[in-house]
Amino acid sequence: MAETIEEELALLARVVDEAEKMGIDPWPETKPPRPWARYAIASFMVIMMLSWVSKILFRFVTV
Image 1 (cartoon, rainbow, N blue to C red):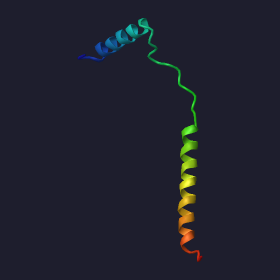
Image 2 (tube, rainbow, N blue to C red):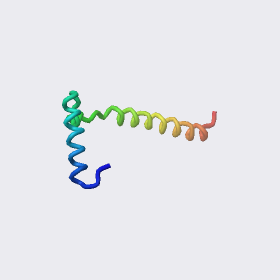
Image 3 (cartoon, rainbow, N blue to C red):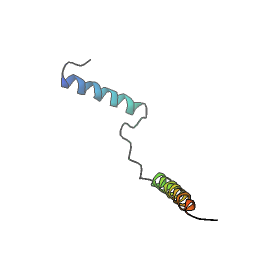
Image 4 (cartoon, rainbow, N blue to C red):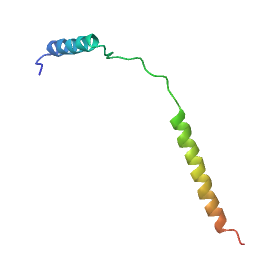
């Protein structure tokens, strides 16, 4: 455990240096956002709402 901030920063610098030597990028570029999960959840919610509304409306139908 580091006792001072300087020791902690030196330790972190060594860890980053070792990671870069092993070919690991400690700060990779951010991936572009992919909204497919939102579309999937939204379509599922629409289907569920239509199902619930149709069940409720079917109660009032006389056959």
